[in-house]
Image (cartoon, rainbow, N blue to C red; front, side, top):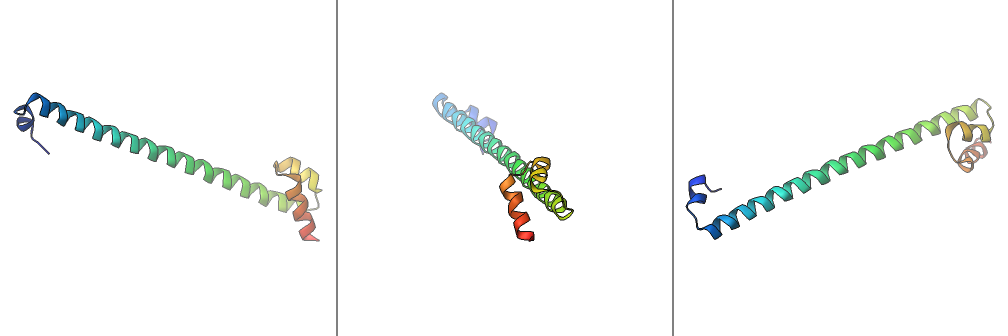
Length: 92
């Protein structure tokens, strides 16, 4: 890292190169941080979706165990009817 005095005492071209390099490094750091934030948000969203699906499946299995018909369970939980019917067939 150069001191302010060293930077100011350089030629104009050297200062320009130094400043361009510093700008490049700041831009790179900013892009990386933005990508990290985007990745975190995506991961969080995927985790929430998996959790919602798992809960819907749990509710569906409980409703089926209590005798509710598969079509109604699919409608209530928003799960695909084929999936709910498959659980009904497994239970038999």
